[in-house]
Amino acid sequence: MADDPNQMPGRILLGKSDKPEYLTLSKGNRHGLITGATGTGKTVTLQLLAEGFAKAGTAVFAADIKGDLSGIAMPGDSKPAFVKRAADLGSAYVAEDFNTVI
Image 1 (cartoon, rainbow, N blue to C red):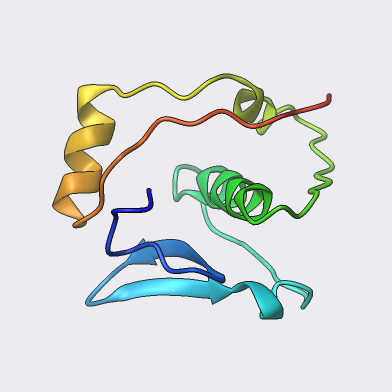
Image 2 (cartoon, one colour; image 1 turned 90 degrees about the vertical axis):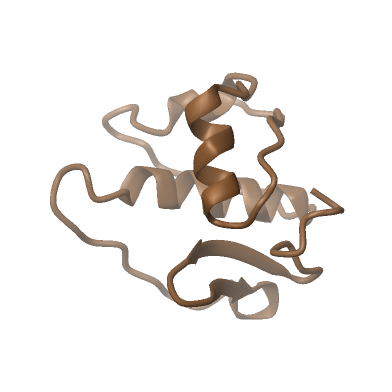
């Protein structure tokens, strides 16, 4: 996503509201909590964080008791809905794969 204006070195794009929201990698060693009801995006947020850290060269350990994150081991897919959603947010969708050990 090097040509994506929403991607910035040293930061992980978390989402977009009125403006893009990022996690600065140097703050990634802090505690965090992701909560919400079913279907609110908790698992996707964890996947996004794991992928962002992996892109930055940081090893990620995730305890996944229910197996919700196991899909991260599969190569990405450029489904039309994904591409459209990214375009709606002003980003380019690029399917990627990451080394994963389960």
